[in-house]
Length: 406
Image (cartoon, rainbow, N blue to C red; front, side):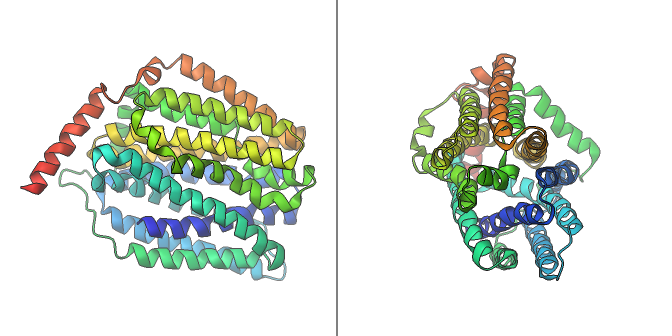
């Protein structure tokens, strides 16, 4: 699963760069590029929640495998559109919406399967390892995409993405089955609402969701990176801009041993979100492309710290019978923010200018995270050594280990 994910992430980032760049070439509009976030939003919400319910009710391996195959077909459609004498704009939006829907179905199952196969005390390390996989793809994918698109054309980026999905589907086919528990209910609106009620009653969980959504809403300007690169007089740096955050994340992952000695995970989520916003604000104010890349990397490192401790809270405290549905809600928390963030960044850039969109969003992120932290005392006081939900999960894991040994 880890290797398949590495291959998929690598290919996905090729398309992640190619789609906004192709829209920029076809329309010349920052608003049109940012509108991708709009068409992705509704499918992500609907299918993310339903995907969480499916992950609790079906074999998670099958769900992951079939959605991976579907994502590969959609990448092939992007390739075919690009090969037309006059590529059309509307297929880019349609495919973006369908990719969002399939990703919404798949991600909860991918996330929910990890706590089943990893020991409770090793979950932070597993989270860091999975994040490292994403970071390697996020560095190599944009870098290769920039070279491919510049010298060979957009079609090669899409073609390699298709190949990556074929390889990852073949690897996922060899996964062991991961069936639902015997007591699992069929997917239903009632089940989804049950998961949402659980999340609402756990204010520390709720805090991780809203903090990340606020940070991404105000300080996720990747949709306007093609315009920022032009504004800085460095169109050659576009791939580096997309990769810079992943470089910072990778540095944190490679040095993440310290995370096991931190127990107040909620505070770290807040501090990291504040750092993300501050770094983005500085990046927007600077006019030197190398300094911009540096602070984008700092922002990526802060995002990794936030993700590490958010995932630790989720994976160490949520019971397995709710894991899929809560994974669906978690996916929305870290996906809706970026989608709306693209719309905000593109819209503000069209009304003001590109750099103002970046630095103002960073400052708004710092202000909103500060206000949310002040209103969420349970998040700030969370301690995994004393939290009752974490203690319950430790006992269940220990009992499972004894039963398996017997």
